[in-house]
Every structure is written in C-alpha cells, then in structure tokens.
Length: 133
Image (tube, rainbow, N blue to C red; front, side, top):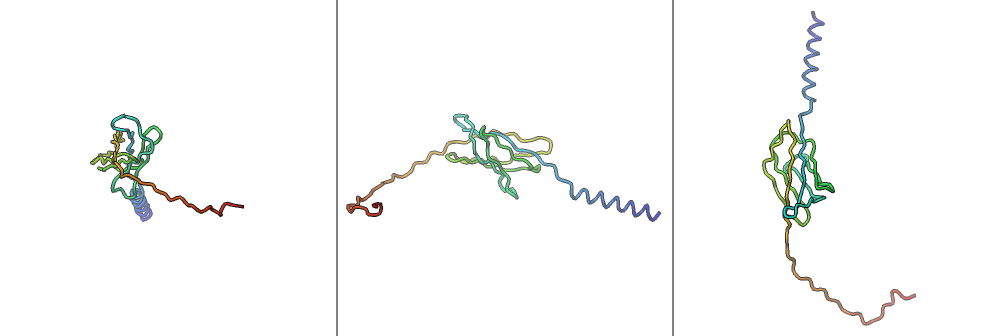
C-alpha cells in the first residue's frame, strides 16, 4: 500500500512538472511588402512586432515576402519600414492559435527635398612635392 501511494505521488509530480515545461502554442505572421502605387514588391523591407520582448521581426526576401515565426497568440501592432518610404504601423493584428496571419503591406514613397549644396575649392598655386621621385 505504501509503495502504491509513493508511485501515485511520483506519477502526479511528473505530470505536473511536464505541464511547466510544455511549450505554449505559437503561430506565424507572413505576407508581402509592396509599393502602394506601383504594386511592385519591396525586397529588404523590415517588419517588426512593436513592443515584443525579445524583439521579433523579419526582412522581406527578393520577392518581397516576409515570415515571422514563433508568435504567441494575442493582439500585436506591426511596423513596416523601407528606405525611401514612409513607415507604416498596422494596429491590433490578432494572432490566434488555429490560423496563421497573412498580410499585404503597402508602403508609400517618402518624397523629401534637400537644401542646395555648394561646393567650392581653391586652386593651389604651389607645385606639390609629395608625389615627385
């Protein structure tokens, strides 16, 4: 009888310990980043989950597609950035355990005008002796 109780206690403790080490279900956020006007894919765009700890994100590949794996179910804000384009924040993306999230993110070009640059120089009238042999 004593052995049976010990065995049951051991079995219960193993079952409880197993739940602590069980992984929570994760999901995938994937999609494509495109130019909003021309609909051309944007390779190298960055897509990140804002406020995630540790930070999670991905860069789009040559075809503009990205994939963020290991996302626990919940509600997230995503940010997409690309050089020469306005960054976009997509609020309240719902990630559920049963279905991966597929997005198409359109970015607009960022047009910025720069101030003029004036290049001036002074002619050196003395011959240089640095390069003579």
